[in-house]
Figure 1: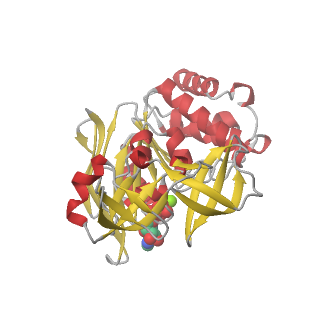
Figure 2: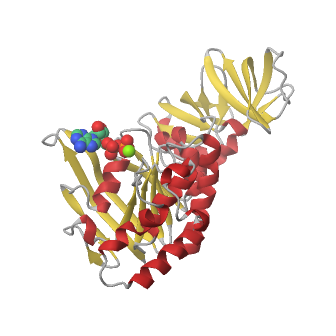
Figure 3: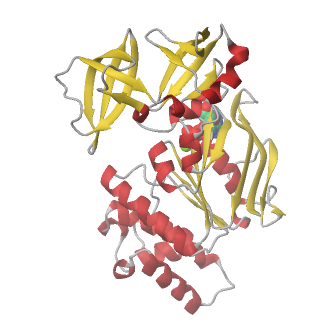
Length: 362
Ligand code: ADP
Ligand code: MG
């Protein structure tokens, strides 16, 4: 079962006028890598701080290994928090920085402490740097020292709040792989906060998507990518963003269809059963860029080419169809940027439908 349970956490500020997070329920298995992701201000840090005991929730509880720890002080929770900014002691060696949290511990002998520090340094590739000062290390190495400082405590779980946000893009990619490797090795639960959906997708065994203080969806990377539970998740996960097209549900000679400003999209068999009750109403038709096929002849409709954006092995192709902006993804170089009109087909089997308020229909 769950090693850590977050049950109905609510936290407000300013006499209740700011709801930072509400009704947050998350279960974390032993050794699981959980990522909290969402736009800035959605309540990720507050949720993590409540778990860490750095913030007292207005209501709700936190359980670790079956024990309710909601009332415990942060230092008694056996959870290690790694902060956004790297806060090492500049005058201490790497060895002393890593050992810092252990120095208070009177249950361990000096020899046991030395051993733990060396094991952790070995895992993190810092063995050769133990006697240096932090200033003699690169940014990535410094971030590893702060991770090491958490690791020597052998906590029940690690809590990390945007730990790579100060690193440049290349190093960030490397640190992601490293942290994931280390976490596999330790098999300790990690709760990792980021605003970066790509980082969330690459790191998380399970992703918790938040918006405006509320959990929108919890699932594996594939689940949140393929089957978003609402319009927010659909629009937030994936790059370039999916096409979310406003349509009216209509009855046609062949069945049902979704009439947009540029094309009337036939409903799939699976959709027909679910949208019978929506005839005449507005719905949002969602389709990922990779499911618009370009350059098909004759094509279902024609769009103007705006911009071709090279992504590496693929290109993002931005189009306008009678005033509606659309994005597609094609293999590199398939669509020349000199073209002005492009035939488009929609792989309708891959589409999602949302109500106007964002609720998933099918
Ligand atoms: P995130 O980490 O997702 O960016 P936060 O948890 O930091 O979001 O903040 C969530 C909301 O709570 C924001 O509107 C933020 O301004 C507010 N908030 C966070 N901490 C405080 C605080 N100490 N006092 C007042 N408002 C706060
Ligand atoms: Mg934050």
